[in-house]
Image (cartoon, rainbow, N blue to C red; front, side, top):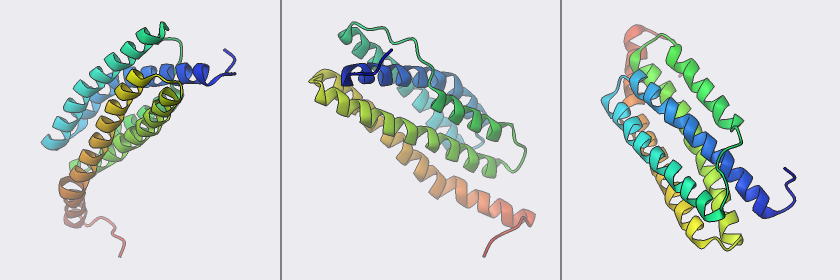
Length: 174
């Protein structure tokens, strides 16, 4: 496809997001299973439900556009998920691994925040008011998920990981 109009770019980016969200539907259960913190497990399970809704919203937008959502692979999400999978396969202290899983999850959230912000702006410029509202709702949920991960990292996981390191005599920087 030749990207010679904002409309074509908008649809292309929506397809990219659709594929990204579907990849995430497969990755989130693995992340929840790998997390040792109950709060982190719950956050991933909640975000899995939200992600199902994100896919439905995108399908709604594609129906409004009379377009198919399929046909594109999101290589950015594929790479982020592969990176997260490497953390999940590692051995180590549970809280340190949870901290690594949070890093991987936040990379995903930031990717989604950037993508949803862009397509929401395209929708607004193209006069797609209903689509822009749906995309903004998803963008808000992605931002909330990122903030939840920040909170978990700051209040539970990172302090536990630090204590684990001190207890096991791991290297510390001063």
